[in-house]
Image: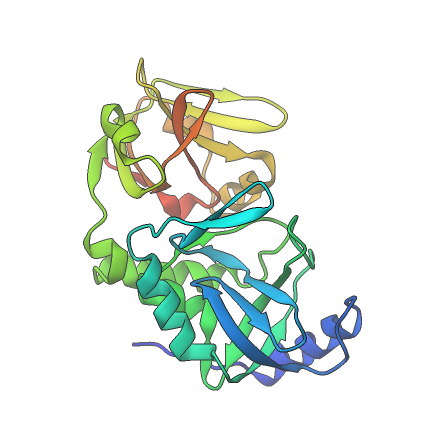
Length: 255
């Protein structure tokens, strides 16, 4: 198993970014007070930190101004693994371009001892790759971590079902691999949509994520007429089902 060790460059960059961030001192190290879930922690200074580049199964969801428990599959395992890595320990945090999310949480790469925590969560199969430009500094490394977990059937990859597009609605808010033939590709200024015949399922690629497809030499229009496997969390939008694809590694061409 590969362990990701923070380099001197990582730490130097982290010091630079935190010197520019509101509510943070120039220190590169912070004490982790508690783990909220698999991808979120609270520091002893009261700040909440959301790991960049990953998404773990949810233990809770926001309803209005409060959080309620949901306990998705593997959510508790992801939380427990994150806790073993970071809780009560000193974390070295590095920011990227976007510093906070819409909830006011700091967005960061987390390094504790010899572990690049964001990558370890992917590597153990307890998270999915979730890239949101412009925070893509370590996307190639994170892609490799998820690939290792998937090839070795670790964590949730050992149990993710392969389903047809017609079954997608049965797996709402669950991680699945949805297989189907692309009937058409719709592209607008903001979004690209892969349609699968008359089914209620589609794969959605937002404008900012197209850069990762271009970097990989993939033309999304080439998916038309091909049978694909789309991996990710099934969501509902306007009574239809979809998986939002942020990186080409989430799409496998079957034929």
